[in-house]
Amino acid sequence: MRRSPATGDLAPRLVRSPYDGLMIGAFAGLGLQISEDALYVFNAAGNGFGAGQVSAAMQIIGTRAVSGLVQHVLFSAVFCAGLMWLIGRGEGRHRLRGLLLILAAMLVHNGWDNTAAYGERLAGAAGLFLILIILFIVGLILLTVTFRLAAPQEQGWLRAILAPEADRGLLTEAEVEAAASGYRKRRAYRKSIRGHHDRKAAKHVLEAANDLAQEVARSGGRDTEAVEHARAEVDRLRNRK
Image (tube, rainbow, N blue to C red; front, side):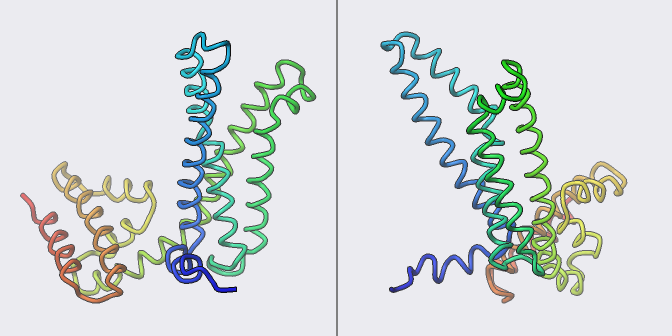
């Protein structure tokens, strides 16, 4: 059987890490969530012989919007990140981690599909709301843990890409570290700089450094016109009055 070009050639290049799996899974889940929302709204509008269509649709949209983050978006994101570890795309051998995340995503999905049944067994009529709160909290914790486990590999690649820019004097070591780190470290770096103007400039330099890293990665390390433009942009933002 011939191998599909999309899965055989594109997937290994585009889906390289658990972080990629997390992002792609989240958007895939979002697409499914929106499709389900549209289907539920259509069905709700047809109930009650067409009476109260707008209120029924708005109720569905409101309910699904509140719970959407911890439903299909979360399930798919965690599952796909776990799949990347399971097939060996993450740093080190963390196949057990991947398997556990896949099982966790499936269990949370099962919990959402059976909230009424589990809630009734747990605490009667009030059990439904208790189960919803528990699933909401557990889902957010699971997503946060998965993100923190997946981010270091991506951040390490970013440091490696920007390290030569520090060697050539375009960026400082502190800027490379901040650009390759999460929101908290970036904010801490900006707060360490005195003066509103310099702090604002530092924010723009970090954003430009990330743009530069994307261009360097896209060019395969070659000094293309796009890379040189990105470097010039870092200089311009740093020296802007």
